[in-house]
Length: 277
Image 1 (cartoon, one colour):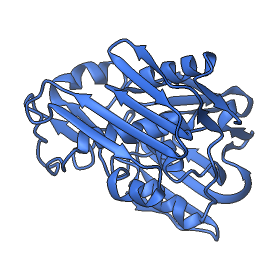
Image 2: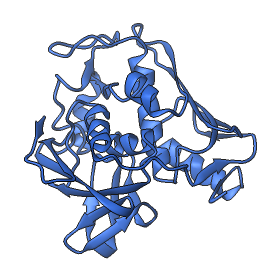
Image 3: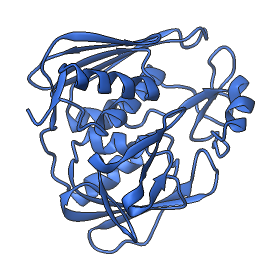
């Protein structure tokens, strides 16, 4: 990871993209108004982004300003973990967000440096109900604050069943969630790369796992609960695209990007969660 030369009120982060493996750069700039993705053709707000891919990462597009960028999930998680719904303009070079530390910590630190205001989320859970998407289950319930819980289940012996929770505070996001690295099994590498994913995986930033769930060198061993914590990180990023993380509680069992997007859309359609409440 490289921090670029900064102008007042901006931070530049450089690295390589997880999927294409090409050089990538993100510039974050303090601005007035909502969070926007900025190109030479204009700004796109969160509401104007369309998710065009959600397999092993998230790619978004906005035709109006010719935005098309992959690997946005960790950047979105940092925005969501700090409730930074305003005050930041995002410019991305290279068509992909850089992998950096494999989690959201570098992005979260950069956003904190800009001192963007934390705002109450526009998304709220108003009714207790569960939504099932395949093997994934999302249990929604109202609450006065933000509470997220994730349960993951893997056959790999060193992972098994793990839980992670977040109480909705920025301090605990930094301490317990932001640092958790993305991961994948070595056995899936060929199929992933054939699908155009993980071609730039850096084994010092990504947890590359053997069949037992051990992290292969040169990666550092997994920290306690790191697999569940990273799934929680991903959940925060996915929820940001809908105006979250919401005021309310979500308990997600076996969450994934595609499943989360489908579950939240269904929750919005059925009035389980609402915008602007």
